[in-house]
Length: 455
Image (cartoon, rainbow, N blue to C red; front, side, top):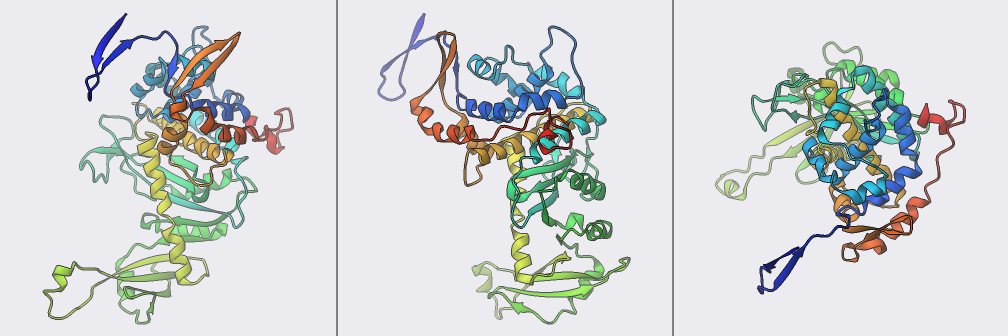
């Protein structure tokens, strides 16, 4: 059976036919599958899952979670989008899946999670990933921030909050802690939409710090003005954690700013200063850094002025670090990577899209997407990619590759299309992935680092 069409330009005849051979547009995902096999991903997930299924017809929960991971990597941003891979029999053979779950199967899987299951499952996966995070000279920077996930129903925890994109709409308000240099989400909470940015931040950081292994050292914590609270600053000082946080301009601080007369110029438009202040209710004085920046008015506006009277905007940081002001401002400006991380999670991996009625089911799906983000970061380090590639870039340059599935005797053969770069482009990555050291056997004692995976 075939049909004919005409090409858009030139009107040449093109024959349309069906092919019985399994074809996949994601042949490059075989590299990710090989990497996960080498780090014993199936065994780790199976050991960490807080429940089992007894039905002989049920898809094993570990395979369901694995299928969700690959669906997110392939670009799914809703549960309905996961059906893209359900008919991809070539990819099923590469992964060794006899059946690919439906979107309802994924929903039923996440509905099994309550608060204890969420904490136990993702704490185990986090320990497994952190055990392989490389030590860094000078330590890692921990960026703290919150974001909004817009909802369109009556899901648990969805409340009216600050929502510039949909005023009056309901949202969830997640809290995130990210190791900036590693592009690694250390910890996350899904919170109700009416929670302020810093609500529960001390308890959240206490859990995050407890997850850090001995070889991961924090050099600094950075956060925006939503986390400018005496309780949080005191907690960080008690723990000896260096911090740089944007100060909220309260009435008391505004009055003090008018008393600052000594400024050091950085360039024609910016000047810096500092002062030590003990605000009302604080038990200790703290160091504040000031950056005064000239407002740049349009040229057309300046030409109409008889005199050039510049206006300024003043930004404030509070810190317990001792470096000079310029160094600390430059360090804080690197926090822009946190905004990039949030955009990648939401736009490239659909972190805000997998939503269900039960709150903890939604949190389980949300934190699964964060787990995928960390996996992609580890995949890039193992593959020897020297610069960070966004998940969407990685998807289109490495994982997307037309491929045919065939057989050679009893072996499967996946033929990667040469016009998509084929095996030639991906072989250097595959060779470096094969150099990834195998994890230590889980038969070791629980206090051994190699046993973290199955602890």
